Image 1 (cartoon, helix red, strand yellow):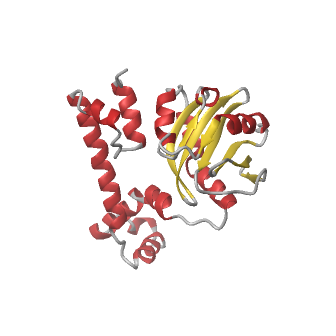
Image 2 (tube, rainbow, N blue to C red):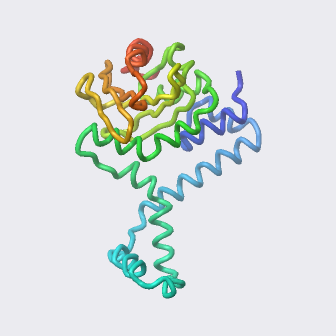
Image 3 (cartoon, one colour):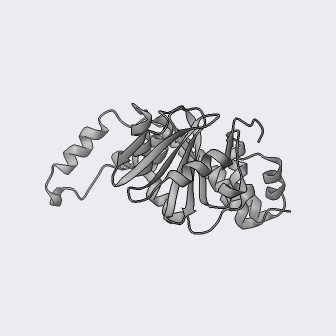
Length: 238
């Protein structure tokens, strides 16, 4: 079955440089597919370029000097400083994703969720086709059974302490909850991480691990069992 335009946009939004055969066939199927893919690639290139531009060494001190001035004196910022600020703000998300270092898995979970966990839950309104879920997981040598993939309402690639992983939001009878798959990270089995009225339980899989995140009032036991049974890992070329 051919990929429709909505499915294609979701896929390249998660991975603008996707070169899977099915993705390439869809891209070549109509002008609007090619235009959407080119736009996503161009945006990705601009973000990558922004990360390679070094901000002035004195940027923070210059920003502080402006903030220390009375409001009436802050109505003009040198163009070079404004450009530096734009780069700094525009690239902030990618800097976090690609350069962040964490002291522990626990600090990673808290930082990751505070960065975009709530935003991902807000986007999790409709279901995600099983094939889209497993296209992303396949690049991480994993696959989700229908019991799990049928509950997934949002999925994207995300950073982990040891490389790229997957961030999923699932629908449960207690409301939306989050699964963060870390393909190359081992954790303290069963450890609970508590932060900002949230809690996460860490679970090792055959390959890598997951953090199952919910509000403190949400029980995660059933989801732990489901993930163990349905998320198969270490499957090269899944």
